Length: 114
Image 1 (cartoon, rainbow, N blue to C red):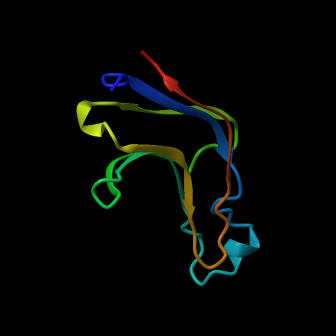
Image 2: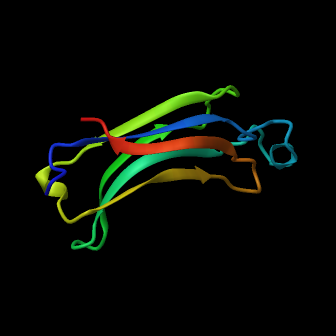
Image 3: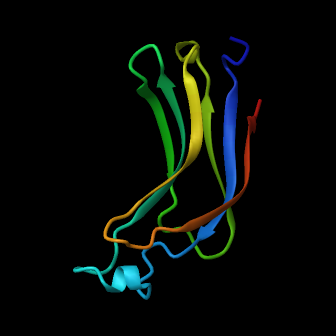
């Protein structure tokens, strides 16, 4: 209850890894290059009292980030409807056929901004 009205920020340093690298053997060996892997960073809330339904899914697409380190941020504001729910933050990559899907993340900070 103390966090109602508080905005939280998840910030990271990120840079491109081998995701969708046309010269990577995982891409070169697919039937229809280029690869179509995807990656996101996220903040999510789930309701454990309602079959763990997803109630928020705030994403930042990191599929095509540059090869140089940059700072990325997502935010969520806690409202009364989120009391008793679980908050998750992290990263997710999707790939198939052994395609490259790597990115780099560092200096992860999750904290209130107000």
